[in-house]
Length: 187
Image 1 (cartoon, rainbow, N blue to C red):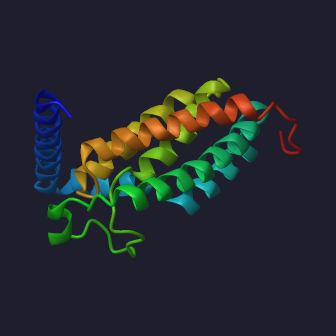
Image 2: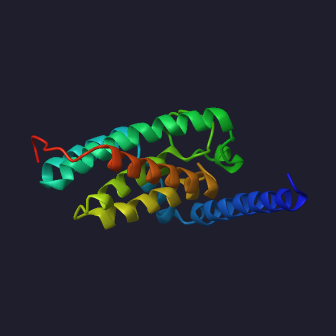
Image 3: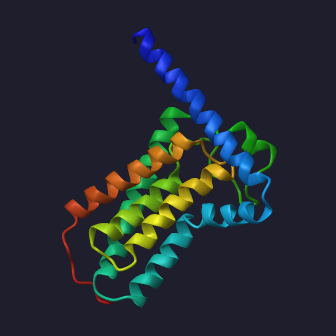
């Protein structure tokens, strides 16, 4: 690799670490924001997303039920992709996260790249956007908030959530393209 590319990658890596550390530090010293960030950061936990998705699918009618099916497929595929990438890359989580655990929940893996929460949140938000669901804008804002929350609680670097969000968005678009519209019994 040419030296200018190595220098660019090194500079971007330092920027990634410093901006991630700074965001986490700013949130850590603000009690209410820190508590909110923890809640938002975990709002994309797998089981919670499925429960909320089914509730939304039954609560709203028509296209939303189909969004839930697409989002569920996209979430499953993104989880598989995230697991494969994490196993290959094995990037450790930020070291400042180890000092003050961001959660009391058990840790599922020690690796941070890419963010599974960001991928899942993006898959849900983009799935809603593609079908023009009434709550699509809110779900997109939520997906960005989840991603920022993951960095602010020290669970990920900025590049982890950008990669996770991009992965989830691409998978959601692929699922939407490959999965034709269907009539659901509750729609």
